[in-house]
Length: 186
Image 1 (cartoon, helix red, strand yellow):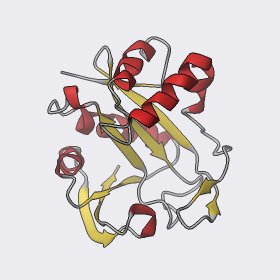
Image 2 (tube, rainbow, N blue to C red; image 1 turned 30 degrees about the vertical axis):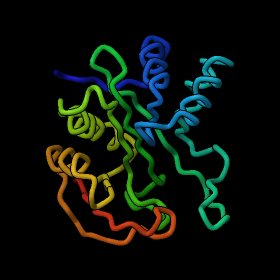
Image 3 (cartoon, rainbow, N blue to C red; image 1 turned 90 degrees about the vertical axis):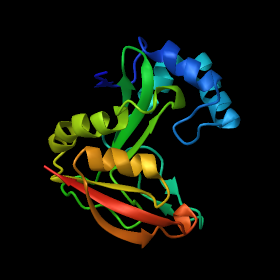
């Protein structure tokens, strides 16, 4: 089934809320605490919540790393993957004026598809649809990093046309796990 990428919006918010009510978040299939926090923010002010998901200028607060140090927030855009209802999300982050990323940022993309909609190539389609959007922000390529054991993410990157660059240790910010770095050039 074909998907579309859309900015987070009120039309898809009910199906996003339904995913949160199943304890799904973009970070985990089972994150009751994170889901509850988002549900509370939506209940408080849905428009403000939706607006908070994108920061094209990187004006948000600094990011606190695991060691307590802070680094500047990068510009980011989050898109919802839709098949008529919320099916997942894909986020793009970048540095203005370059395709390079700072050392503390492992990749340009983060993506997640809700468990009940997996196996339909939604992630690969989303990556391919994100390419023109990445180009509009001045990028010549996107790097996609993932844990070495994340087979579904690897398959999505490969189906989208990304090439494996290397295996590496992701460092303390990612619990020193072994990771893979893919690149998709345009």
